[in-house]
Image (cartoon, rainbow over all chains, first blue to last red; front, side, top):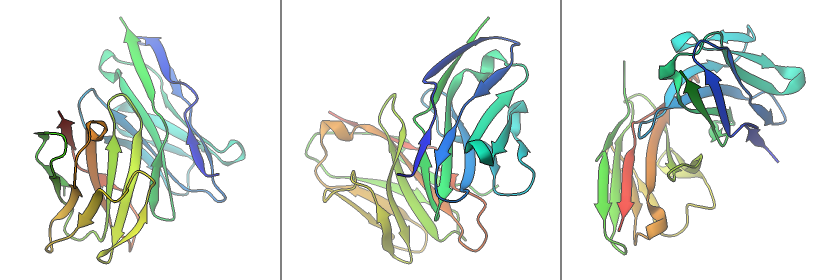
Length: 111
Length: 114
């Protein structure tokens, strides 16, 4: 079955530390891939997206993600986390023009 | 930058009442979507709409739900007889088919059923 998996429900990192949020998908072909961030009570903000080409994509707020076809992964990274990055992060895929979301990873940032 | 606009931002309704959530997609977009997010849970697909008809719907989108594009600009989600478990954030999104750049989401309508 086609799915998007975010294995980590909750991650805690210290401010200034590096971050990697995992996302795996299972689709027959390479879908379009996205990362969204959601602050409490807010909407979905697009961080970055991958359609084709360079497998390392840069997004807003210093985030980047790398598409690895062999691992069916699209992990989100940030070299140095800021307290304002605390939020819920959703990986999403679009396949045949329909978007599906992972369950989300909640990021807590320790001072 | 073009936006998807949703109104109201928050709606409180009594159980059993009908509600209509409104969305104004980006003007040159032709695909429209509704998603739901129950508090603390994942974002779930409800329905997609293209060419004045539903193109796909999820198991959640049962007979109490309906969508409509009553004019050239609005896209509505109607919930006929609301239940407590319909309380959620509802997101509208739109996309253009000719060249896919991704979805643009509205800021959501928080529906509270009491």
